Image (cartoon, rainbow, N blue to C red; front, side, top):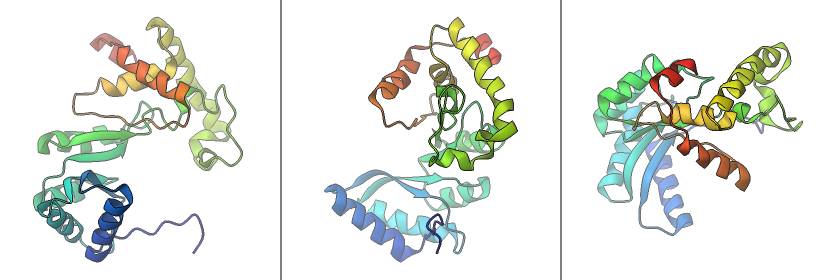
Length: 216
């Protein structure tokens, strides 16, 4: 197996063993929100969620989440046990979930947890005003290379200009836009630096009107 390959498993045995191992590792009696990260396609989602439902009944987890799931998978999973949260990529740069998935989540009262809400750091200046390390996974994404990046820089520069109008940084404006998509939207920006964490938190102070959201 190549080092970059990921094996996705959702069997009853594997789901239970992972949960038990997490409980032991964390030293807790239960896990608040337990996600199915990536969907196991070699077996029915009902089987995976059925075992998670048992773990809820055993009070080892409180709520069930999904990640990277299609509308059909979400409905089928929700029919077995209520899904509390759905984690999907969502940002100014990646908006395809607006068509079907967000309306479905709101119909079923499932919270939306956008990952990469800063577009993998793009709106923080990665690859635009900063250099990307040669070992970064970003270089494997077409949007960060060659002519694609040259074209995409236009988006960064436009957001940078708008951010001056709102007295914030481009990344704060990008995060504020996601935060303003609804009270059921809880973005999870990733960072390894305290100064970036502080900057991300500053997005909470950016208040946007309907006109401003349209401009963005």
